Image: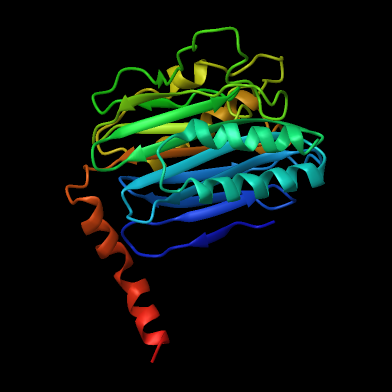
Length: 286
């Protein structure tokens, strides 16, 4: 299935959905409420599973949604899983609890008896105040590189109390519990989310790239854009592999820069970002 992209306005929305299925590599510009950057995807050619991604905006154009998933299973199971993920995201489009999305998809995957296990990462970003909520189902951490530099900070989750299984991959246990944590992002910060094909790639000698990637790509040069950083990440990966990227596991990552917080209220944004839809609706009744 190829990517579907809807650019509703120049300001706010990019909605795309993709499941691996023999498609070619993708390098797409991304513009979401309060965020802009690039999405890179390269399937390995495996017939089992693949990387999925879903990006969207709430109706007012105030909140951005992002989900990455790495599924292992047979083609039909992965197709069902991707459809569920898309529907659940649509149902939760106006909520800011990313853990609720993982909880619902997990229950559907287990009760549906899919021959599938998937890790997933869900993010919800409020462009009005810089609030980022994130939840994970056994997925690699998203990371933040602050505007003033330093190191890529992993966005870690706090273990809840009790003995319940928590934040485990989807499709394993219906009683699994998913929680979210919060961080504040500021204009100029960079945010990256990725699948494990990026950091678990192995060199010809069998060495994992791992955290060396973040050490090699932590420097922020003056005027550097997310596109520039993405290019450095890909160059680092190619050097590490010593071969073409497509020869290894699926690789998907989204690298975004935080824009200045939107100062309008949600109602104002709703009117501004949807006036063209209302106009089409009114004209359709003529």
